[in-house]
Image (cartoon, rainbow, N blue to C red; front, top):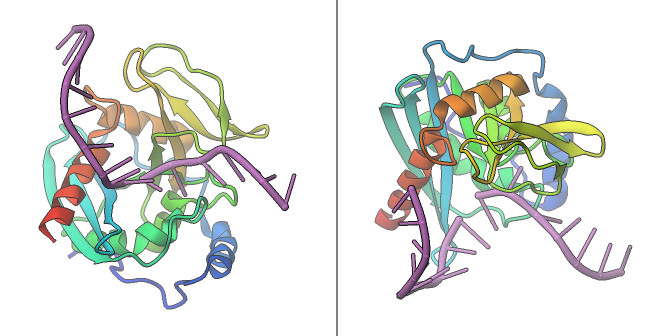
Length: 230
DNA sequence: GCGACAG
DNA sequence: ATCTTGTCGC
């Protein structure tokens, strides 16, 4: 087994006020001055995602480890749990991380990079899901979101690889990155221990013929399947 | 105060 | 996220 803590810290919050306090306490632990794994070198890239059944109050998470060079699947794990937190914009981590951590903890390999669904530093308190998961595991993480959340951006150029800054006021908190010619961009932000340039480079490298990187596509498919089987 | 708002 | 059929296009 990898040495990822598969369980939650003892102070895991149950109320919105506690959750915001946890974010404020942990946000300074985000490491921003590491370049992260060099794009192009051998890398185990892990995608994580979560699916919900609010009727049954069930949540399923998946972690899929890929060879970043070939996108070959190396390993897949899942975990099922109870929905422990409502969806509140800005507090997504508290809804997703418990089950994601359980799935990650079942991985044999240690991820070189974790690709999350959502945001990292592009967050009202600069501590979105990807940053939170990074701080809890110590792993390099990035966030790839399908929507710009509350942030502004100019339309990037039309070609794959074109990008424009994602802005909170005048601060660049992420990037709108075109992964396919003429297709709506994805929104990339730093989670932990990776630069923004590196994050975008990895996203492009992990994207093969679809808008979303293979890591998130695989994780999305797997957690949905795990939810049905549960 | 009101609306918008990752998944 | 999830509810949901067909449909247009490469």
